[in-house]
Length: 164
Image 1 (cartoon, rainbow, N blue to C red):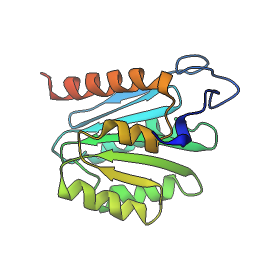
Image 2: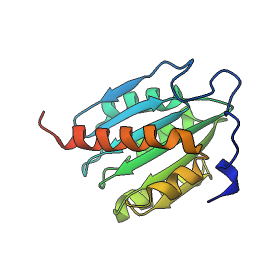
Image 3: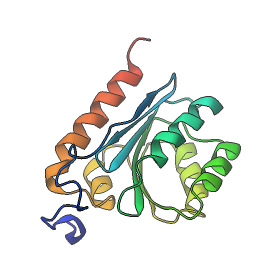
């Protein structure tokens, strides 16, 4: 276990746990979904790339997760990834913000997109789909917050794959 998340103190003065003092924000589109859970944002993509209107709404949710000077994002994708213009929009909207991102994917295309984003937001770690705990380590998630994030991730993956 990394010592980065072993501390028992909360990550901010306003919230000793995930749910206190935070308003959840969420978006669900045809190919992607995003949800703020405490001080984290979870983004799930299907195998298709997000449409431009979906991408704009995903960004709104992600940028709303700013906490303690950083935006911490857990991305799980079956292959869907932002195109060049969507990555440019992310770069411009997140300019000057610190983003800590963990990407879980089996997709070479999604990995390549994450590498391109890493040029402007260097704190991105790309991991195999099953490495959820390593992703949570990278995001500096406290032990007590992990069950809620794992549960939300599983729920979002199921919802996105379910009937429309």
